[in-house]
Length: 373
Image (tube, rainbow, N blue to C red; front, side, top):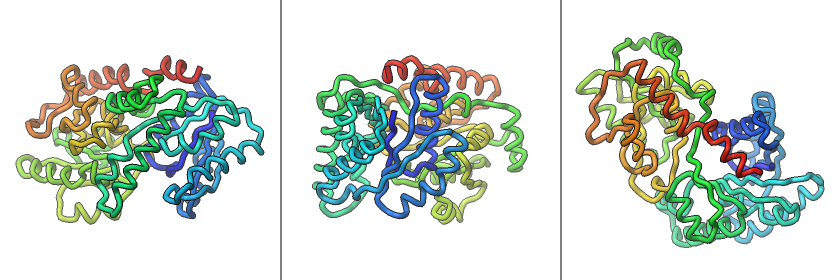
């Protein structure tokens, strides 16, 4: 399988949803895979150069790189499709599957799919046209029209589609592709799990008492992740009851500016495999989302990571699929009516065990075998 990628390989989501996924497939003898990283500027290429040795050492995955035209250029997709096909024709590789992480990558794979007689699997993880609503740029309606057309094309040419939400699954079916699998954004239970010893070690290192309430936020500062609203919620809660907030983000400079007037906040940028330590140290994860099309289509990877460590999640009803789990598991709390509980070791373990069967990568082994057979 060839996994086509255009995003920073060291991004936490890419490590969780691409690198760990490929490693899992190889270890379970489901399929062998390599990566083609497509880039169109020097900054993207530097991302690859800084991460290539790390990826080969920790994941044993081969990475090829290929410079293509920026997607913003008119007719670039047409030319880029030919470039990718020509590149692999020279290599004379036997490609059985192409795994495209985005609709862009799916469309870029079209010629290669045809010339290599391989099956195209599109990993649909969101709805790009809706995300434009967060950008106040001129001619957004033209960009949205283009992205809607690209989404429809990806639906048409893909042999199989993985949709991370019910919203996306229905949208893909409406666009004519019925061979769609619903798999939410998952995380590995071998990387994310509850451990009482780890919990105490991290809290001791941070100087946090056993009975103190600790919240955690993990992710970027993008508008749809509502970081400012997260800080506001914590500030109001902290006024009533002293508590702590751990923030895990790679956007340290921006985050420092936003939290400079707040108390009891820890800010870290850590490797993907170290995230589990801080999740264990926390009691509640904060995951607020705006109620819109973008979040209705979404399946945040962080939710899986939170729940596999047995965390309680403070959220709203924006991410429909996950909020509905509150009825069955009771670890999802509406932010409007949130009241803290006494967190017990037994309850953390219970929550983690339930989610291992619902939202861990290992729970979908048979479905992955079906997709790649």
